[in-house]
Amino acid sequence: MFGSLPQVVRLLRAGTSSGVSLLMWQLLLGAGIGWTAHGINVGHPNIIVPNVMGAVFAACVLVMLQRDRRLPTVKVWPWGLVVGVIMIGVELVAPPGWFGVLAVIPAAVGMVGQTRDLIRAPDITGLSGGYIIIAVVIQVMWLSWGAAVGDLSTQICSTAIGLIGVVNLALWLTRIKNAEPVVAVVPEDAVV
Image 1: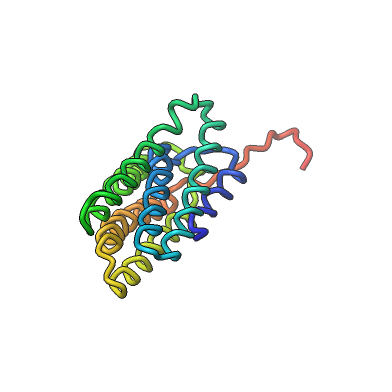
Image 2: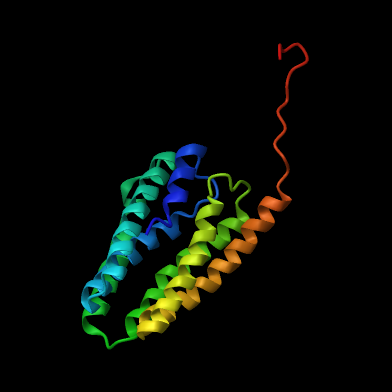
């Protein structure tokens, strides 16, 4: 339920959003809204509660990204809200399993957006390694639960997103392993 908390804390502590994918958090907001609707529809509070919290944390991250990058509201909020509404519509009208297929799309696009930022961003100090690790663990847990109760939507989505999460974890570990240490330059005349 608190899987996104390390990213919120990292943004607060780092004072920068460098390396954090805006697209991923927009789509995580939409996915949180959609999965909350799925949980309500299938009557599983264990889907409802963490996804409500996930949407709240995604909104917090979006607020911090918007402030740090000085982005207009129209560039931050519509994508996530539209995705959430579309996911609710599919949940209400499509046959079982289709929600899981649809739910993979925003989550995968968002996670691949983070993959892109892990590869391209010159600085990833705003990105929480704890969040990346927890994201993989959470997908393993969802896959186990989905298999145990026979929720096809959960099984489909957690498998795909878990695999992308493993790639992101490997990229993050590679980036921090190869990162040059920060060395403070102290002028010769400075009093230490």
